[in-house]
Image: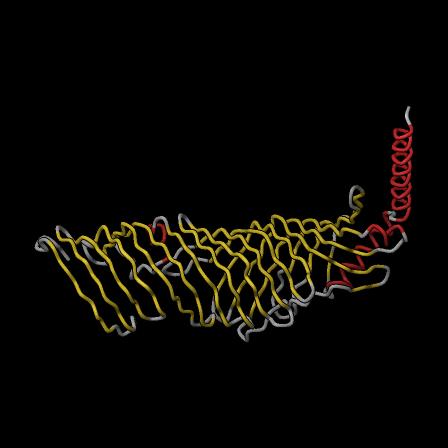
Length: 367
């Protein structure tokens, strides 16, 4: 056996001994009684709410963690009997060096099958306020969380003042704290409850964004939404939860899939084709405007209450707030080819500046 091999074997032996010694030290310190006591204190002191927990265990491997099953966090007073949060299993991942010194420092929290119920009452008050802290401590434990992960989780939101219900489920998300910003990265399925005229909508989401806790600004690095054959990608900012400046690119492969989103009283008899958009959404959350390009490809539309409509619509137009500019669109009405150019100002009370060229016979067009 040469000298190099001997050195490698000695180093490997020392490493194994250290690992075994660390395992024994951790196991002797994290007794079932101590783990149960720590879990109870972290749950009640850390969340500052009434909390009940189920079975508690210890996981020792590449990382060491305390597992807590069946966590139930009571709701805020005045928001009903349903819990604010339930978690099938929470894992408190412990930092190794403090643990070897017999100190409990939680460095990461993993939540599996969490279900949060966020509510806003008629006065606009909510049962949940986001006040993360990078360092927090209690009796016998300390919190220095760098990230929180969620898997197979659900968030429900109920706004009683505006009668809105939304649900985000199958969430796979990593939330990390970087300076004064919360970084969100992951995906999920976003559900909007059915209304009188529109059925429930399910949108697949994927996100990478940051929330500045001091500036109250959301910085969207990338947000994608997919519904049926419609795909939208966005990036930009939302300042103070209201001022919006977001660039948007969208490819709606089949607008027929969007018919269900139009209230039944004005829903077209038939619609099809594809639409591409590339522009910017600005304004406030209460009043948004879109400025940018809209391109139509083989669009067909039969308006509500009509037997015939317009087919093979192709062309482009530029949208500027409530105006449509640089319109160049061709389509077919019955046996006639129609070309429209020009602009429309103020679509709410439209002022038309259009030139219409018709080639063919409109006599067989029925309304």
